[in-house]
Image 1 (cartoon, rainbow, N blue to C red):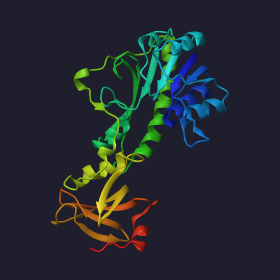
Image 2: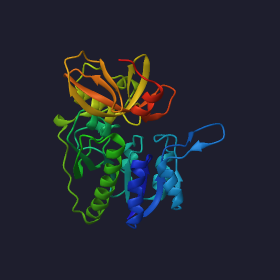
Image 3: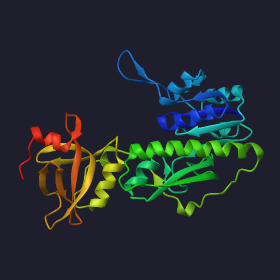
Image 4: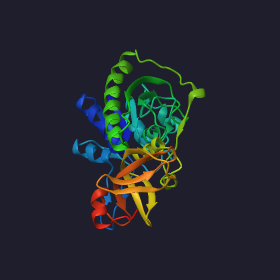
Length: 303
């Protein structure tokens, strides 16, 4: 099939790679404009890096509604547009351009977690299951009819980077299985139940500070769901830390936020449900990410 691919992060690059391996004709690749890294270098998106490695033509329009992007799409004449975490809203004229339409790979079980950060919010809210939805694109955000859903359990110890990588592979597989059904006309088309919709907004630094009055489960979910950015954070013994990994501790009657111990197992802090957690991997402000036990060797905390 002649496919125009649109995507930006490594999550999207996995799907593009699968399309290439499946033998589809990738007539072009849209990705976000390059980002400046310093005065002399710029950073390419993972999708652009992979596309160039395969000799694919890359387009990086600054706008989607000034007519230029539409002219490119029309000149490429794709049968299908595949969008995976592109980061841009497509106008109706582009959605309507290919004869088989536009499909999107979205990392949630729609209609739950529409929006830009579905994987993070599934972890933050303590979901036990998530997945990937292949859907027809509509003008409303992530509201198109669903073609296929692939589900997977979330391990209670799984953090964002691990789940991200698993869902990228799951999405690529689901996309690969969907395309033949688009060609032969057997693809399902299930409207979403808008009454069940939840939203997964962009992350912000306001989500970082840990509130020790919350339960140990909520705080551990916060840590797992905010890696690698903006990261859960806490001020302990006058020092601010980013928190990367925790382990469940002990029952206690001490007040939330109390440091119970600081040693080989990490920094043990009381949560609001009468349980403690060990902060086992941390990064002090201005320092490097490391095991808490290693940090404590040079920076002991008095209890």
